[in-house]
Image (tube, rainbow, N blue to C red; front, side, top):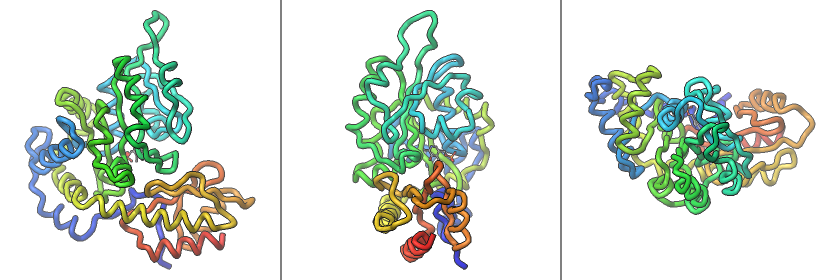
Length: 339
Ligand SMILES: *Cc1c(COP(=O)(O)O)cnc(C)c1O
């Protein structure tokens, strides 16, 4: 049985062509700043995002944690949305690595209101921690791959700017947002002090993320990356894959989004599932309407050759990516219908 794996877009494997690029990559010692492939990737990434500089790091989690460590000091407070990746899925790094406390705001589909943000920013008072970072996520994973257009985040960023508080964008899937909006990514990240994005998800590279920001921010980030053990040596073999992954990304992600829409359209017609969120990118969240536990549902799908992740108490997440074909999406729909 051919398994259809829709658990995540992190599952993409390097293509034959990417493996050839990896094999030929020029390398050097990156801790000495001498890896030409990494230097090229960092320069290219910064240019694409319209920022002064970028830093290649092993994972999106490390990129976010480095950003938080650079922007804050222990004892400070970070404002983030209650279902954000940095709060939910980074193993408590904000507390453990940054020594900050997290002020989580309840959002509507992944975004809190400007009023709630304004109310959460700490004023000057001997009792209070300092608010030194506000984070956002685009696309928003827990909100079903929700895409935020620049004007939706503009009021929030204006509040932060007025209060002189830096902002970080967890843009793990920022290219998905850009493709969905038919904009270039630099437009979506222009007003953030820093941002991270993953090369290892829909882009299809095996490893790596980029953290982007000002020259000064990236200089500090480079030091923090070393502290965390993320200073790699001839990692140009990974950076070359990342550079290759950036080439033609728009077409590939547009296809992933198209497959997600096909899946969503089929789910809308099912009796046993309904969509939890409108589908805006490559993530589809379906709520099971039958009586069985979500783990039983996931197990039964697996027995039938479809892998998905449980997503909360009654839902599953299905993610389209370059390693699934349209034919497999049709088969996935058939399997879901029999559950
Ligand atoms: C995947 C993801 C990350 C972290 O990336 P890793 O490379 O898996 O550490 C961060 N934020 C969001 C929104 C993600 O989806």
